[in-house]
Image (cartoon, rainbow, N blue to C red; front, top):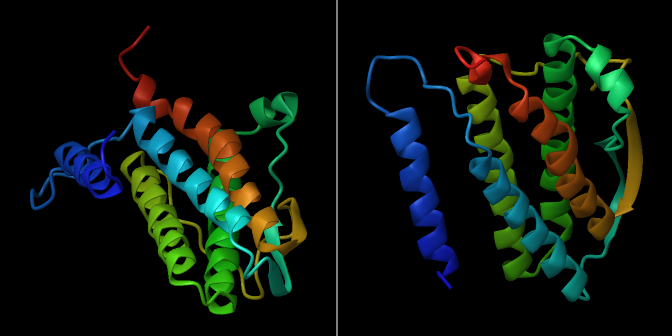
Length: 185
């Protein structure tokens, strides 16, 4: 099995190949779901590390996270823009919540997982940008009123939401991105 560093290096090479940094061309769409699979695996690693650790289980105060349940009938009736906004606002919420988790944890191994989760959320935003999905700009005071959210009070719940959000809504959005299906019939 490859070491975590080797896997990360291989992943970064794949990502660099897809995006071709330094060229004046816009980002090529990143439609390969293996990229998302990598982020899901790392989110699971963070969740497992938190469950194995005795420290940092509770959060200083509950945090708001995106709803992870998907009603497929409702999801499919949404426009691509509405789906994208829901995913982007969820990623924004997760970024805020996981960022606050970092301040309540002193274990350096957990810090590494948390930092990795934050970097991965940023990278998912870059993947979405490559698919011409606009970045989310939160309204003053947080998330737009129409977004479904809930609150969690433990680190393990938060990291479980992170995994489930990636496996659910982010996966649905990426697997059905219109730019990834152009020219295929």
